[in-house]
Length: 357
Image 1 (cartoon, rainbow, N blue to C red):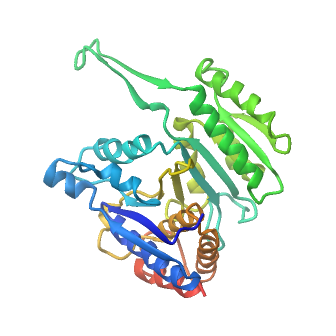
Image 2 (image 1 turned 60 degrees about the horizontal axis):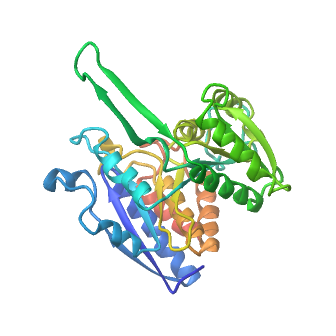
Image 3 (image 1 turned 30 degrees about the vertical axis):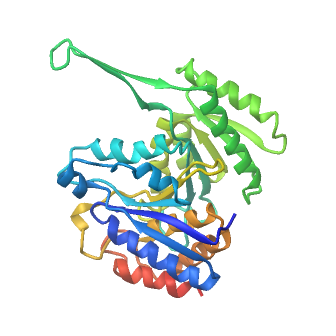
């Protein structure tokens, strides 16, 4: 439901994150004027620079601050002077878990004018969605080392699945498939039931039981390795995919390349429950080598802002941005690659703003 003032927390983050965030906010400002809604953005300096100065990733009271907002926007995290895993676990995973953002939503749509590595395929062929469980699996951090640093070292990492976690993700995916504007109306479970015979058996049984409540939605199943093959061979066969946290992490990167690369791919970490706070982000990394050069593609960040509006009570504004982006990619941009777009980062943002009308 639309609110009188849409309250957003923006975390520009590291590297080129602030640059693409600026363009997303530029588009937000323009569309809010056109569609006459009020918004407020609080900028947060969470990321690598703050961590290096203070040793702090999320400051005290930070989670409560986010809970006071309607949504969060994340530009990118990843700093060359911070060891891998520190920011990813301390910021991204921490927010997903503590804010219970149990749905990771990844639209996979080939835009006009964007090249896919799949020969002979166009926008009519690549238009599906991956719904990834976002708070369980191997990402729970259960495990440890024995005899670390010795020739006898043992490392254990355990995957955790709960009936509640599986069911709420699967049920949300069925609801989403039912509402999605697609003639296929098909939800495909992607797992590995022939090998992971405990945790993925839980996923399989839960999927079958929930499916009985959605007779209007067709169901299918793929082993994850087969899904990777069919996603390349027949991407048009998919409508909505629901999958586990780890498998979703992997197949959405494959899907991102199919839709033209991380320069256009956006996603949402959703807590769809009443009062829940969701976070939206471009899927590309912080790309520190391009920082300050005005060459990084902001389309993914702008797409993420469209998703934020769609899921925060302003679906018409989100759709308006989607239409403007498709116009720009289809008629203006030469490439999605950094430095090869034919325009700079700021100029692409300006083009989308102009196309909003």
